[in-house]
Image 1 (tube, each protein chain N blue to C red):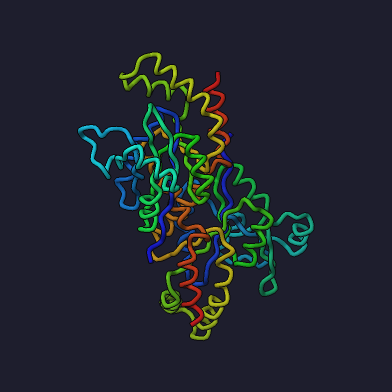
Image 2 (cartoon, rainbow over the protein chains, first blue to last red):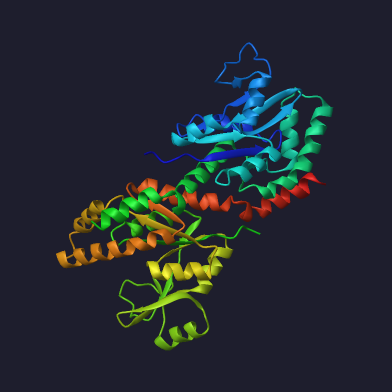
Length: 204
Length: 204
């Protein structure tokens, strides 16, 4: 039997570069991204089962009832959630499954899945966050100010995460997350296969 | 102020390749090896303060009395121990300090320094351990049999370590240990410098 994967919850300030980091991680064979379920209408480029699992409202509400979602929220009149089955299947296949999720949701998931590892991604400074938000050039000053205000409020959540990873250089940040996951897989608690094999081997 | 280093306790079966792994680790700037104190006579190639701190028996016993040793043991009529001051100085400089130490000593150190990380290095199989012990070609059959017997007794200690690292390929084993140490340094508990900086930065 292959070793079970690790559930990885990634959060961070808007503008911290989470999306780019996650994109790099899932290029690696051992990592995959959780797929959300949603009741919003598919866009022309959306592929069902790849970008999202598209559900009707009654289907989604049935999933809520049956506790088939790891977490869910409603946003601008649509439901969004994380189907449990897909995540558990991937973990059983030995994949490390990434959930990119906002902070309050993240902490709720951690309560339900205490073995999940929570990682907070942050730029080194406030100035750097501001610079990145402005660099996009797509947002109005008001949106930028709102995001910065929200980030300053979200600081209090940092202490609740297992690991704090600075995203100054993309490669270092990605390699830091890979190190965290590798280290967790080497923990005694996750090495019972190795320990048992050695013990039975040695005492033949 | 630079971040304090991590105390790393490495143990493993005789023949697991600990020495080679440690030699590779201390080639890296952020790692250094603890230097033992001993009452045994220096050999012609020994350099005081590099290979060992050479002590007289009264000097060593004074260190025991003053609790200046992290651990000590006597072996073939000589004292061997780990001077606390050297280790603490290096940790304060931000170095990760490696203690290569047998299992009972290792677990005693962990009790005294719960923040220390304990790593158990093992070959993948008993057969591989036997092959390595024979490959050296320097030991008698009796010595080899004794080491294998000891290894089979030492298995029970594996569960007491924080991390289990297989040494099948030297490079992978070294990189696994580097990952463990990097991951520990990214833990929330060890990131208060980053968290505090961000918090004060964001709430100016």
